[in-house]
Amino acid sequence: MNENKTVDKNEKMEIDIQRLIGAVWSRAWVVVLVSVLCAVITFLGTFYFVTPMYKSSAMFYVNNSNLSIGDTQVTLSSANLTASRNLVDSYIVILKTRTSLNEIIDYAGVDRSYGELRGMISAASVNSTEIFEVVVTSPDPVEAERIANAVAYILPNRIKNIIEGTSAKVVDNAIVASSPSSPSYTKNTLIGFLVGLVISVGAIVLMEIFDITIRSEEDIEQVCKHPILAAVPDMSAPSKGGYYYAYDGSNKRKRKKKHATSRPSEPSLIGKNISFAASEAYKLLRTKLQFSFADENDCHVIGVSSALSGEGKSLSSVNLAYTLAQLDKKVLLIDCDMRRPSINDKLPVQKSPGLSGYLSNQVHLDTLIQKCGIEGEENAFDVISAGQNPPNPIELLSSARMIRLLTRLREAYDYIILDFPPVGEVSDAMAVAKLTDGMLVVVRQHYCNRIVLAEALRQFDFVGSKMLGVVYNCATESGGSYSKGYYKRYYRRYYKRYSKYSRYGYGYGYEHAAKKVAKQESEKSEKTEKP
Image 1: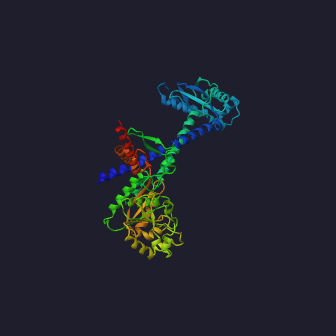
Image 2 (image 1 turned 90 degrees about the horizontal axis):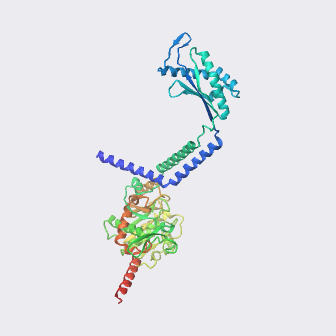
Image 3 (image 1 turned 60 degrees about the horizontal axis):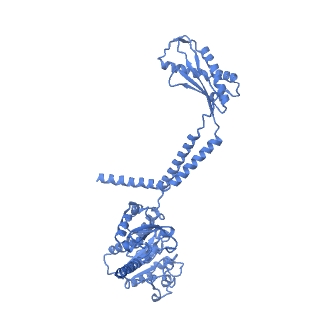
């Protein structure tokens, strides 16, 4: 049991790492742009604002002979490197005394203070040997050379006078530097590039970690215990320069760029002419809903809502009603969103008379129901529009007249679909949700976030409504099961087997494709029969 838990944790961590890598990779252009920009800024800043510095150095050899420091006699040998390094340290201390530096200033004839000169001079042993080097750094190469040679002249005399029996001999005099020692433009530019790289990648990773937007089915599963009944793809994608599959006459599909002349400017979002993937998703939703109800003889009232507006709940309600009507079921779609009704914009029905007029006792039921046929579809369904916007929609929806309306309509229909307002913005849906046989929550990818979704589900649980599941809307290949390649492999196999019905692209329905295929086969057979 513990081993299984460990495996699950490891898998979850692997998914998170892959998600972070994917986020950085998808924004690689941002990373490159920021890195190059930082590199350019660093280069320009170094070039215009950093003063070039020049170095000149003089080298000295520590004379290893018998010497005396005060009353103490010290004998050094060439093998005693530790004592030699200690002696070098003593020489460096003598060099940086105030007296030595003032003598160097006077000899070199430079306009520097004791403190300035002390910061310009550095000294150290060369590779732990008996040779030490004095380096002078200055923005003026001539000044650096003059100070270094002044050190070479003053320091041996100072050492000889202070430490008896020893001396420092000059190994190499200083020369004027031909090029600056700092700054290094290449090094600073590379550092700027790396800093930009770290900042951009770090910012993307932090944004990804703290981003709670729903981008995959796994995000929904983290906050929702209810099943994901269907993943509906983004049906508006082809109108934005998407791709479609065309038949080239050799039973092979070619991926072609969508042209304005080859397709309608706006894709169909309802009815039989929606994309193949969307049609299959709604049929899958229909099938799962049928299994969700034990008794097929009774009318089933299904509520459709979302956490936020703009997630596609009304579009899902219309397509669900159309898909159920294809089974020769009597279906009624009621627009319960009396604040922002949209069913009458998507279907050829009038906004009034509508539900608000009936609930306010202004319209009779006989004039309330409108017949809806989508572009001559044989399987039509009935619609009740929202009506005029009332000042008190929640009171109308929670009234006894609404309860009596649903009770009466149950006797005449197999399915009643209620299009509710978003529960995360208004509480109208909660007033009627308890009257339904089940609720569907539409969640749009890259739109809703986990906190809002969890709160919406909690609201429905609070009123005791039955949750049927979630409809994952506008799902792209970068999220959910698409990222695992499941749908991609599935549709590849499907088109391989049934390619003759899909050779005209996603935008055509099955009946239209079948007629085209039958016509082509008939023409082919006629040509074959001719002598």
